[in-house]
Structures are given as C-alpha cells and as structure tokens.
Length: 62
Image 1 (cartoon, one colour):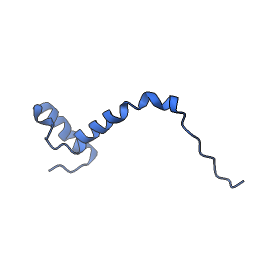
Image 2: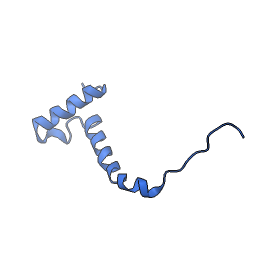
Image 3: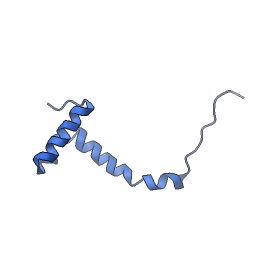
C-alpha cells in the first residue's frame, strides 16, 4: 500500500446533464474575455456589461 488514494471515476450518466452547458459557458467566456466589441456592438448595454465584466475579472481591455 503506497498511501495514495485511488482515483475515482465520474459516472457518465451524472455528467450528461451538464454537457450542454459547456458550449454555453465557452461562449460566455469568449464574450466577456475576448470580444472587445466585435459581437457586443448590437447595443450599448451589452457592450458596457461585457466591458465591466472584463474589468471585474482583471482582463486588460484598453
């Protein structure tokens, strides 16, 4: 016995409901971190929301 815990596996049926959230979370991360106005030019509110989100996360944007 080496004293290290054995790795456990995550059962796929418990993971399956969360899989659709992955692309949505990646899109949100792109919009907040990398957009810089390319998509968020549709309205002032959305642009300012993404801009403030970058400042909140400490990402330089200007």
